[in-house]
Amino acid sequence: MKSNNGVYQLNSQKNNFSRNSTSKNPYNLEKIIEKYKNLAKEALSGGDKILHESYLQHSDHFSRILSEVNTLKTKNNIDDRSQVVEASKNENK
View 1 (cartoon, one colour):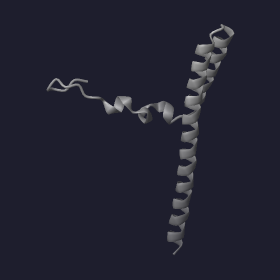
View 2 (cartoon, rainbow, N blue to C red; view 1 turned 90 degrees about the horizontal axis):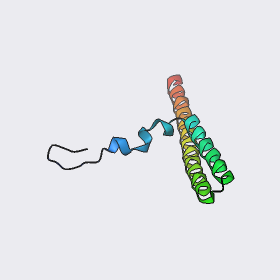
View 3 (cartoon, one colour; view 1 turned 90 degrees about the vertical axis):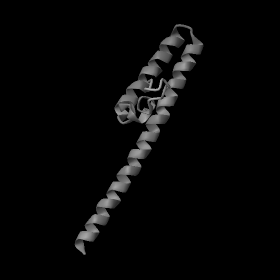
View 4 (cartoon, rainbow, N blue to C red; view 1 turned 180 degrees about the vertical axis):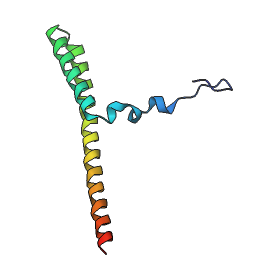
């Protein structure tokens, strides 16, 4: 994006993966992982081993992201539960 003085600036919001809904919805990540696994299968059956490996790498990449998302959600759920417990303890005093 060009600013008023003619200098190009990066739009950090467009380049931020966390803004993408994919990172917030594990179901979308699972669909993407399956898509790349299927594409890898098709590439292998077509005899293209390099494309097969490329698709598997994409699948692995999104699997790691899904794992991180699940870990963060689990951590956030634990934090939320402890806050509820603390709040109820404070109310009972």
